[in-house]
Length: 502
Image (tube, rainbow, N blue to C red; front, side):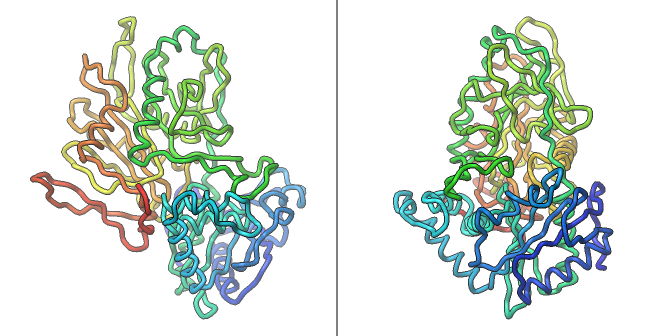
């Protein structure tokens, strides 16, 4: 077994192997992977049971999975399981076919929206090409292939095993958030160690969406008098101009049918944002886009939740309802955002009645599925995750990403000192996007929330890219108009294909 450092919270898991198709390339990849996983203490099962954490199934490109065959929908019922394990579909995609599909999705992304909407895929919904074309324009052809494979195999997690001469050559790992890191599969022992570690991290990273609503609501009068919800409404419109938010994905448009039960949300939208509000001693955040359709580009006051803390178990957030309003479930990143507020230093600030309230040094938070192209270190600070997060990726809405993100921002120099001139601090989360925080303005300033972000973006002190890092990254110093700028450098294995639109 090739030694591999692992996240401290990773544990051995039970894996049920239910192959649907076998090829020489898949056999080699699976044999090497299972050998590594067994050495890591994992159990490989012929049939799933209530101890099963992961089901691995297989496919061959072109042999699609139908609605009635999808383990995502039916594994729990068929095997009488008490819970739904993670499903991973390993698909043999010959390298020549993968390159052909890249060309196809580049061309699809280059079509005008009306033209792309006319493209039809046999067996998928009539609007599937429209959705996938949008993904190609936003995240490049590699993201589009991922969405296509996820739809064809009805599997949120897909590993495209790109084969050359019937041997594994590369493997691309796709998830719901749009991650698409690539593994070199030519050395099977090294491949198994890397992919095994990635798989354990993904499965062991539990979701933290068990939110609890407090009994005491925010008074309707208090809510009506707050300016922050209006600033939130404006933010959605403003930061869409910089690529932070886009059209929500509706799963029924891809599949061509509804009634998918609780296996996957019917829709999901990218990104979130929030503002710490002294009047409620909490973070006002966007609502989740998975429990109901929320377009982050154009929210209303009714699409916002009040988060006042993280539960002691760290499994969810404490949410205060607003009197007279429907209960709003906060963004899947609620624990992550509130965790940042709890991890950084704070200071006292007066509320409207003149009383002093302790607030975190973070005032506003902005998250989008995009990356940072460059920044001016005189005005903006970058923080980083611990190293293993760049090779063993974890997704949004999970406890490990929330704790890793909070730890990263707790190391920020500018967040420890409110007088530090750097008003914006950002963190690139590989395979996911960017999490940015904005400090409070000087006492006496009437600048609304998100002003620091907007100034940095408009002045070019922070430049965004739709090319999201998929692994480790670096920064190269250069001079621009007499100023020192740090430009992001992505190694080939961390770089995605350039997106077609901003």
